[in-house]
Length: 102
Image (cartoon, rainbow, N blue to C red; front, side, top):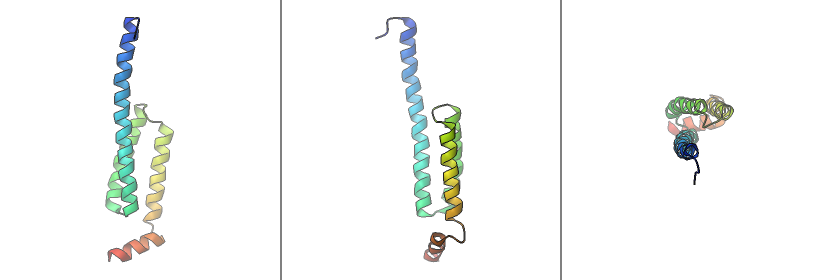
């Protein structure tokens, strides 16, 4: 319990800020989870769309300070590397994926 008006106000602000940050982190994690699923399934079109959305969400999260910029950039770079290596024509898994879909 706050003893001063300013402490009470700070407590209210903290509750609001915590809720806002929680929503932001949750949405970034959801996009990340969807992107991982799409990569596992090998769905190239949805991976491309989700990469754009994840990039946007992660960048905004870093901008609003409820996610670290370096972490957002590392995750995006990791997904881009996986995407390019997964769908590279010389990749064994990609060749199997193509033969299964023919």
